[in-house]
Image 1: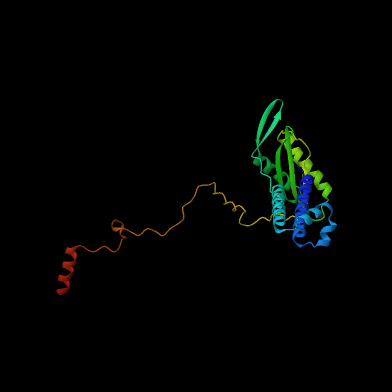
Image 2 (image 1 turned 60 degrees about the horizontal axis):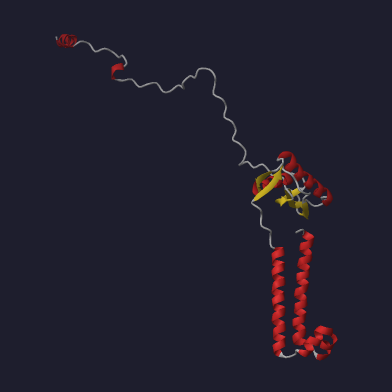
Length: 239
């Protein structure tokens, strides 16, 4: 059901609610002179001005109001998204997941320079795929050009890229929003700087402190004289 038929049904249901409210008001608050001016229905009200008749009329009008409210709720409720789309091609039926297809179309639409947000709904219709698009565009965008370009983008994506048939041109609804903000590269997302490559020649180890001498490597010093020579020198000094 297209948007025009839905709008007409909602308006008729709302008008019916107002009419029933008028009937209830007339049944309880209209005086004798007002009742006489309302032709056949007024004649009925004039013949049934007791409380029982008013109560029956009120209940009947309330039932009709509830039915009209149900019609409005059903028409304005969001339509259920199809999970799978069946497409008939060359005598064969192709089943396409609806969610990836919808995301692919929205990605193609948001790539347009003046589209800030896009919402696509896809469903099967007449052995092909039908679409409803909700676009939010930047201020000053030509609505006619945006509609034609969006239709071209989604049809080319389905036919040329995915090889799927299109049953009819998409229905496009345009909404004007704020200007499109380009993403700014953050320092957190930048890759780290590459490390310098190691030298290609032989690696010379870094110089360290000289090793401390061990017991076997005691540095040379003045040699001590033999024990016999020391004894003879003492005796000569005593004489």
